[in-house]
Length: 369
Image 1: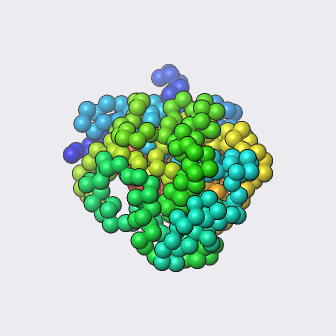
Image 2 (image 1 turned 30 degrees about the horizontal axis):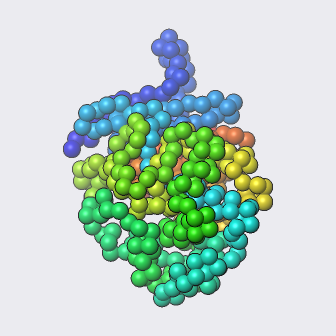
Image 3 (image 1 turned 180 degrees about the horizontal axis):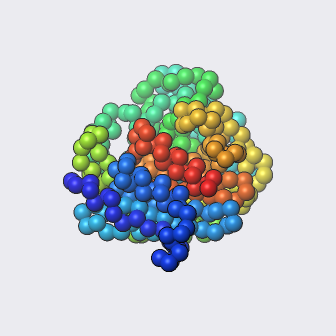
C-alpha cells in the first residue's frame, strides 16, 4: 500500500486569506501536524486547540482514507482509548461524593472474592489503588488470547472473560508498592461501578458525564457495535515497522470496556477535561483527590498520575491535565491548563519511538505557542 498519498491534504480552519498568508508567521501547530504526516508517516493528524484568548482552532493534515485519498474530516471522531479511564474515574468519584463508594475500602467490600490469584487478593487492594495504578494487578491484554489479534478483532468479550486472563497471571507487586499502568485496574473499577449502580458502565458514563455536559460527539459503544458513527478518519496499523498499513477502523471495543472503549472527538475531549478542571463534574474534595498524584515516569519525564488523570510538564512552565489514549489505529494526546488553554491531537496509527515523542511535543507546541 503506497504511503506517498500522505503528503497531501493539509489544512487548518480559520486560515488567513491568500493575500495575507504569505506575510504571516507559519502556524506552529499546523507545522507540527504536517511533520507527523510527511516525516513520521502518520496517515492523518488532527487537532483541536483553545488558545490563551479562548479562541478555538481545528487543524488537519494527511488523508482520511488511504484508498480514496479523501480529506480528513475536521474534528472527526476517533477511538479515544484510555481517555476512557478518566471518564470511569469521574463516575467512581461521583459515587464517592454520594457516599456509595469509599476510596480506601478494599475491592472485597463491593465484590467479595472477585480478585484471587497468585499474589492477588481483593481484600488487600483498595479502590484508590485501582484508580491510581498502584494495585499490582497484571495486564489482561497480555493474556494469550490477544497474541493473535486479528482472530479476536470482532469478538465480544464479557468483562469477566478479560479479568480471568489477568487472574491467570502472577501479581506484579504488592498493592501500593509502586506505580505500573494496567488496564485491569479499570476493568475492576467498571465492575464495581456496575455493582453499586445496578446499571451498565456505558450508561453511567453517558448519564453522568456525556449528557450532563453536552458532549454531542462522544459515546460509549453499545455491545456488538464495531463501527464509528460520525465522520472520522480511518485508523491503520503496521504489523511490522516497514510493513503495509492495515485498516483497523472497525473492531469490537468490548476488549477495552471501562478502560478504553469511548469514542470521541478532539474538541469533545477538550470540553470534558475543561469541565472537569472547572469543577462541573466533581465536588472540590473529590476533584482534589483525582489531582493527587504519584510519579509515573514511564509515561514521560515528570509525568504524574492521579486517579484517572495525569499531569504533564510544559516547556513554557506549569503542567497540563489530561490522560491520552491508544486504540488500534488511533492515538490521542492532550489536556488542559489551569488558565483555560486546551489542546488535543490525534493521529491515525500508533506511533513508536521518536514519532511518539513528537506527538507529545506537538501538544506542548499547541499549549505553549
